[in-house]
Length: 31
Image (cartoon, rainbow, N blue to C red; front, side, top):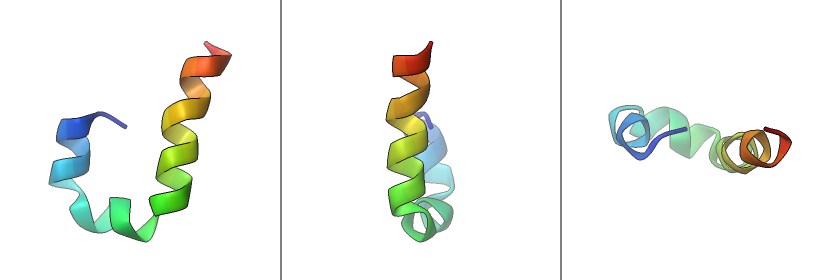
């Protein structure tokens, strides 16, 4: 999740704080 997207969807990022972090770091490692 890009930083600008985080700023736009602040509510979603807070709701999915754990999921957002995992989804953010894992794709980079897999790709």
